[in-house]
Length: 379
Image (cartoon, rainbow, N blue to C red; front, side, top):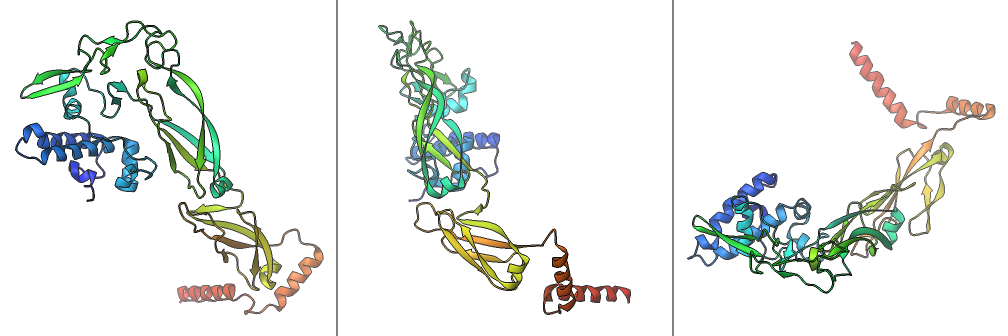
């Protein structure tokens, strides 16, 4: 069964800003919370769908992916974001987001903690590749400065030989409960920040954070046919989580360098090639180099005009996840002779004198129509 549209679930328009989304979300969450609908067995499932929709749409990157790819953006291998990452948290998480201000501060975002351990941040890396690399695909190594788990304390944050102790405020639960009217609200423990433990003797190398900053070298596989602006997701290669928490993801944002000869439009390539006036008039041929390393011969018929396009099938870019290829379009531009010698000028003047309307039908026809237009204005 297909999933419901996230915007429809929240009752918000696709143009809604952050404030409007949050307002719509709060309204729907209040309406469908299971505690307020004890006799409706479908309320819990509806509430989870609303929670999931808001988690995606409140994040600018995830919202952009959803707007472009729909639900496929978060399925395995779809849209550059990969599967998972939005599994349903407890109902207390959503109420913490709604009522956190009333309880003295907003709670941790759902999905940023796992078992009380904070998830590391996602990272962005901008990478520029040549058109040739986009054509052939390549494996590249990149260096990314990021937070990694501290080896001295094995990510615990505690000095070797010691260990974290149970938080006295929450008794190790990582959350505390308080009543607000007819609601019982659970929120992150302010003492241990949801970890359930506090460190009395922190590690000297990481200062109790369980992570230190290092430069990592990673391998990135760029598939053939990759397009400008595509994002590649490396799951778990982002910033390490605090005190042993799960790592975030690394997103590679690709851009393709401008090429000396070719312009790209999707899977097709375009190239402008100048030809001499004699070749355009008499006909001829020339060779053009292609990105696959071969040469293709282009035949120019006599009387070819500037702007004429020639199509070379299958000489464009590879189409990702397909064996198909785009095409290469050659557009010829007739070059007007310059720096003429005396003899060349004489020959051109002689040619102009013996030329007829049939030699230049387009210009002759244009000026004939222009004359009729001017004559009409004079009447």
